[in-house]
Picture 1 (cartoon, one colour):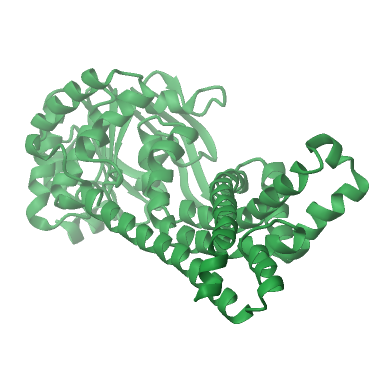
Picture 2 (cartoon, chains in turn blue, brown):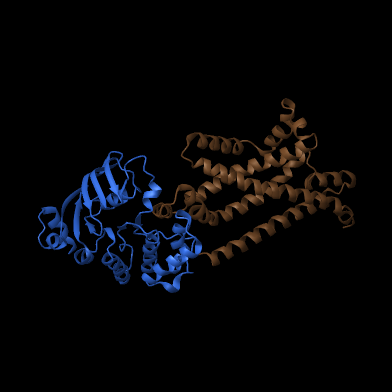
Length: 240
Length: 222
């Protein structure tokens, strides 16, 4: 589903990603952990072209992202993304937030788009909020809407960029629950997070990044109970 | 009071023209400002360059000089009177010059409004596959517009006042009519006072309507 070869990313002199190689299978849930500044968010943002790649190759959802001939807008329709700050469209209500993609990008009719959106709102448990505006909702509710908005495009892959980091502690659970349900339905997911519980429970594979490299990766139980690298051990000692 | 009542129809005729010029200029300045702002933010350097040159030229010279130059100066080197008609050219040129001048300020207002929209909004739009134009139309401009209302109302008030500069190039609006009336009545205090009051009424009601509109938008779309 995702294949990354020798990915480098620099901002001017500052090299953030120093050669990332990885492969994500369909239906796989990969959790990326690591200290701040390790490049994990940048890595995720490269996967749907929000960050321009400096060098290397990315293939995702059957399309070559790094090929200049690839239509990036087309590619992004197949790659959903959930942001740390939710980024719901402030000028649109909840229903419109979810339907705008299907309607304007996929040219779906309003009726069909509304139908899809209402099913998704039911799925994330927010049926009664469709005419609210984003800032009338709590952070947890906004993030669930953001997940529904991404799902409305029927993506092949979902990318999560620290989806619970901006939430009050009591709202983390409701968002993680939606993500767990999604994982159990077989969605291919790449999740950057500090939620080690989620990584352990839901992740099929954990990637530990530090200093722009993948330091170590493996099954959650192996990484958490028997980390091989010194840096992984130091990091886990601090967060667990 | 007698002088005012007697000359009120003439003065109101000038007021009508002032309002007409103001409406045309306000409509055009918004359209021009929007286009120039989008050009200014374009990825094509030629468009950016044209837009900056336009804004700088019109902001760095007085409106009165611009009006003299285009309304009275251009006919000396171009057969514009033949193209548009001797009577029509000054009317069109005056309205167009005023709109271009105000449009330069609106360009900056629109540009600041667009740049003020949170980057995350654009990223979210991109992430669901929207292209730049769709993102602009459905996400960025509606949000930018709300924060643009107060400075735009300011600029609209300025535009109403700036129509008074059309008198020196021969447009018979409110100020020009006032001068005509004063020439025959010598009542400069009363007539200029009346004209000031009329300007005040228009501009004050425009800004009241605008703050009402702004409150409504705040309630409806938070």
